[in-house]
Length: 475
Image 1 (cartoon, rainbow, N blue to C red):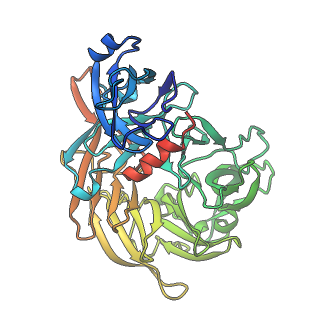
Image 2: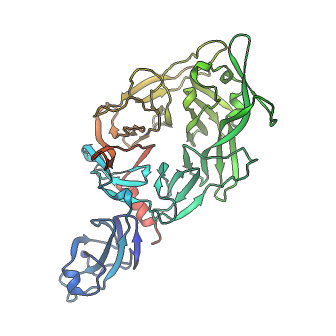
Image 3: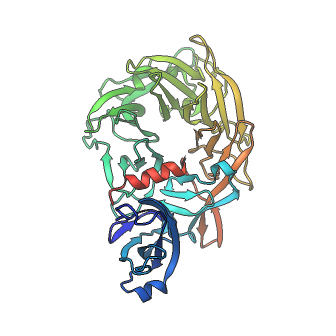
């Protein structure tokens, strides 16, 4: 029988299983509010009656933070209304308290998306397309609250980054895997996880990390700068700089593959970044990757370089550089097709798609979702083939420097999170028509009003994927 007796669930859309073949083709499940023991109290407290077929069904109960009693009823049977009572409860925390946080739907979903669900990083909550919370990560095991890069995996689990740690959890929030912790101060290879964490089809995990390198800039005769590494020394003038790593772990937490940006940037055109770009801190700021497993290719994004690198796997060889190029004594050159971008993917028809924050200009410029075609020969530039400019329904800040992502849907449309302070979520088709729009908001009691709630990224799943998550849980 599911949910099991006494279960405490972090979701409202629940799998009910009677544990055996039903005695009749159609039967009812009655649900009452409260932890009830007698039939009279039950009948006076019924809040939902669900018509069922088969052994397993998924239904929604009204609220979080509530005790429920349920039973099976066979209409017309002599024992109708006297089925054995079962009990469970739904948990609650501030992130599903809709008087504090909400997802305000501004444009109802087109019919093909009405059964979908969207998650937000702020609070780790899953909403239906009407803005009702249906699942959340509770605080019971120390992993709730504000997350980064919350995603749903192919094997019905979830992954995310919290602080400097990375986790895989079940739908019931049990921790299934945690990325290794590198506490040794002398181990500078992977000292901090950040931005992107993905479970691969082979069961391995790939994540962005940080490498600390002692280096400095030296001004050359042509008024440019070159970056040199101290090679482990503590020579004067050198300081700790952050470069990125991309690490693949197996299920036991062992490193099976890794890649360091310092080995490919230092000594390249990266040395010639003009100091007017405020890059004296020497931080290329890796913030996104996409592993095209079919073609064994990784696309790695550098926010502060306005660049993507195309990397062969497992060779680690850089096979393409897209974006700005730097030359001695000159401002950068390049296509200028994107700026301070976040996330990247490859569409079903072979195009690169990413969220372009478009935040380099001193003038107000809204972010865009762009699709580009890769060059047919090495050294060529990307060709823009489609772009959608994001919009804001209120007078919001026009700098979108933090977060944002895009995901392709099965029909070729895109689910988008705008990130930053105005973190609107929307679905847009390739004709540029928005099919659903919503805004995560937080209530500020001192101001007496709702304001947009900052998100890093968001994700979307179908009703079928949701039900797979429910039945994957060993309750």
